[in-house]
Amino acid sequence: MPLVNYVTREITCKIVYYGPGRSGKTTNLRFIHERLPADRAGRMVSLATEGDRTLFFDFLPVDLGVVAGFNTRFQLYTVPGQSYYAATRKLVLQGADAVVFVADSRRRQLDENVESFQDLHEHLAAHGVDPRHVPLVLQYNKQDLPRELAAEPAELSDALNFRGVPEFAADALRGANVFETMRAACGAVLRRLTSPAVTGAA
Amino acid sequence: MRRGAAPPHVAGGHGGGVTVVGAARVLVLDERSRFDTFVVGESTRDAAAAAQLVAESPGARWNPLVIRGGAGLGKSHLLGAVARRARELRPSLHVVAMSAAQPLPSRAAAADLLLVDDVRAGLPASQAAELRTLVDAAIAAGRQVVVAEDGSAPVSRDEASAWVAHSPRARLVRVGPPDDAARRAILRQAAEARSLSLGTHALDALAAERVTSVRELLGRLSRAGERQGIAGAPLAAPAAVAAAADDDFASFLDEVAREVASHVEPWRMRLGEAAAKWRAEGFEVAVLERALRLAQAPDVDALLATFEAATARLGRAQRRAAALDPALATHPAMHDPARVGEAEALLRAAAPRPAAVPNGDVTAPAAPAALDAESWVLEWPEVRDLVVETWS
View 1 (tube, rainbow over the protein chains, first blue to last red):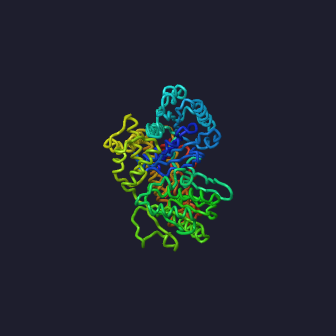
View 2: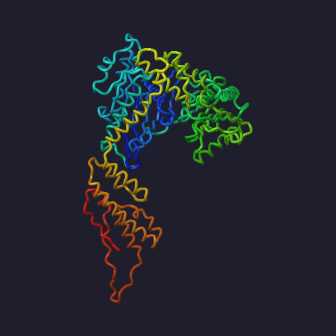
View 3: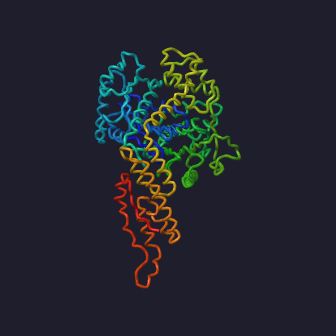
C-alpha cells in the first residue's frame, strides 16, 4: 500500500513492472530514467546478463521533491520475466502499490503474456492481496512491429484486460506511451491515498 | 523486500569473478559499459585513456585512478568498461565494484581490482574513513583501485582530491560536458542503437544545443524520437529541437500535485502538522498518530485542545521535576501527554513530605488515584470531557 506519512510529510509508492521475458520492462525504466531530470532520478540499479535479460531486478527511485506539501517518492521495479525466476518475481512484487503489466505484442508471445498475467495474479494472491484491489495498468509494447508480427491492441485487450483497466499501446524502445503508462500507474496509486489503511504516522 | 537494499551479487569462476554491491552492479553487468561504446571527446579524452591503461595493466601505473566529474558524464560507464576490459584480458581477476554510499562489502579487501563509485563530499565521516582504509590497504597490497568521484566544480592541481594527495602514484582525471563533436557522435550512436531514424539535420540540430550531461542529451533524443514516432514522418531540425525541449516532467509534477492535493484530507494534514510540531518539542505523539489512522475524521478541535492542555500540564510538571530531581524530568511519562497523570503522580511522590502537625495528621491532600493511562489512550479521541485531577 502507498505510504503517506502525515507527520513527516512523505509519500512513498512502489510500482512494479511485470510481464514475460523480453517484453520491454527494463526498456521502460531506462526510458523513464533518461526522461527525468538528473536531480530527480536516482541511479537506476540493473542486473543484466550478457543476453540483456534481467536476472534479478531493476530499481529506479524517482524523487519528485516536495509536491503539494509532501516529499513524494516513487520506486519503480521490474521483475525477471523468465519462468524460472518465479521466486524473485514474488519477492519483488511484495508490497507493490501498483503494477504495470508490460505485454509483448508479438503474436507468438500471446501465450507467454497470458501465462505471465496468471502468474502475476497467483503471486499477488500468495501475498494475501486481492488482485482486483491492486491498481493495474496494461501496456502493449512493441507496437512498432509490422502488423503481421504484432497483435492489435484490441486483440491483446480481449486476452488480458478483463478488468477494464487503463491500457496503452507502446513502443518502449522509442518511448511512445512509456511515460504515459507510468503516469497512469502513479495516478492510480495516488487516488488511493484517502484509504485509511494507507496512512502511516511514524 | 520492500524499500530494502539489493544483496551483493557474485558472478564468474576459476577463483576470480565479479562482486558487485547495490547500485554498483549497473557498472559491471551492463553490457553497454564498454570502451568501444564510450564516445571520447575533448572533455573525456584523458579519463578514457587513463581508464583503459589501468584496465589493461592493473596496478602498473596509476593507482588509484580517480575519475572526477558531474552526474551523467560517463564516470560510471568508464568504471564498467574497466571491469569488463580487465576481465576480458584476465578472466581469473577478482573484481569488486561498490558504491561508496553503501556499506563496504566483506569481499572488497580481497579484490584484485577495486572499483568505487559514488564517492562525493558529505559522506559520513565513519564511512569515509572506512573507505580510505580499504583503498589504502588495497593500494599497499598492489591492487588496482579506480574511484569515481562526483564533483563538477573545477579543481586545480593543488586542490586535487584527497585521494590523489594521499598516494604518490595517484592520478586525477576529469570528465566534463560533451562538446559539439562529442554530442553529435553520442546522438548518432544512441539513435542507431535504438533504431531511431532521425535525420542527420535533426541530429545535428539536437547536438548543437549545449547540455550539462550525457543523460540530458539522451533524454532530448528520446523526446525527439518519440515525437517523430507520433508524427509518423521524419522531423525537420526545428521540430526535433522543439520536441526535445518539451518538459513533460513538469506536467507530470503538476498532475501528481493535483492528485495529492485532492486526495489528502485536511483533517489528517492538521493532525500531521500538530504531531510534527509536538514531536519536535520533545513530546510523545502516539495518540495523534493513532488518530491519524482512523477511518473517519475525529473531532480534531477537541482532540488537539485536549492534547495541548496535556502538554501544558506536562510542561509545568517537567519544570517542577527539574527543580526536584533532574533525572525525574527525563522520565518518559514526563514527555507523554497520554501519561500526564502518571507524570504528576511521580512528581508528588518525589516532592518532600510536609511536616506533620501536632495531632499527627498530614496536611497535604490525599494523592488522587493515578489515571488509567492505558484506557485513556484507548478511548482517545472520543473522550471529550476528560477529567484529570491536578495537584499543585
